[in-house]
Image (cartoon, rainbow, N blue to C red; front, top):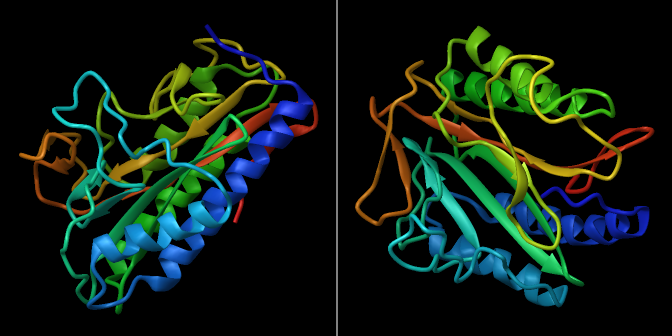
Length: 255
């Protein structure tokens, strides 16, 4: 069931989203050659604690997971697409890093992700990230009253496929509100004018995931969480929490 949020609720979700935005900004600033993923997790945790917010990631255990998630960020490096567990791995020059973070504040959730390169970037990585961001922007632009979920999916998928990138099947965005994951699912590829109608008060986490090699295959790492590309090519993941309003999409996690 999809819960339509009131203007007051959306304002409260904006506050949660701003905590997420600050956490991601702080992590990006702290990320450098030699810094460990666990240290980046602590940077994000400090921001959440400073805002009296909690993490919807920490301790989260969906049905597929062998263990509860042990951190407040997902840190996915190079060929990891999403759900990477922060470890003692220390970042190296040229690493492509995707950071996903959430916050729970006042009973409402925010969820967002960024991708960036540490040190000197490869041109191919710059193009991959820029395409992911364009796909996100296209998906957000389609998130208007009267459109359908398929319009968002089609907008994202068109940008990704035109760029020559793969899209991991079965993973995409989702509704969000009092819980991090709510209905409806928001695929990253689909047909326009299909699926649920978009209505004022819906709030969606829109999150393109791109595989640089152009294939869609992925596998689960031994930790039971991290998804990695089958062809070992790099991946990018970006995300915003977006409210559908009468005046157009409102990005609640804008940084």
